[in-house]
Length: 191
Image (tube, rainbow, N blue to C red):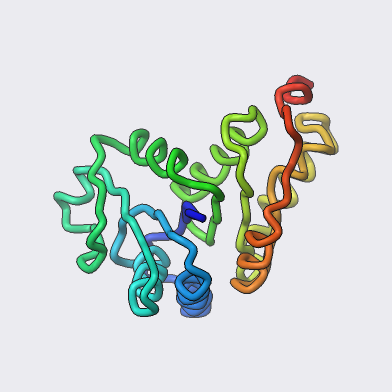
């Protein structure tokens, strides 16, 4: 299994987020889950990559050329794919993934997560979309998604697109269950 992980690049965040990212990277390596991520060397991206590498796991970075030119890539990720832009980066990551996991992050992570939800809603991505809600980080987004359902911007069935987890161990458990959503999501995509 290959999991595409989206996560923060900020190194100024609470260390508890870092500890959870490190634990998740270790668990991925021990479970022999291949990781594909944004290629960064700092923040949750860097911590996750370090943990995967230190535990003998498989990790691939995908980084746009301008970020690579700035020196933002992880120095010890040997499998690094350089893309022309951010859009190509996401396409490569989604194409290689059997599942998506979103850790806390900024606007880029939020955009990647919501694209994963949209792609699954339209049947263009079939795998699990798992949100790691460390320290209740995603509470506002979870509430907003609920408001979308309540206001009929999403169907109640759409809540099956994503799964909320609170710990790295719950992420691994969710991946092992590999719950299917629906066979033809386009039948209910139009509201």
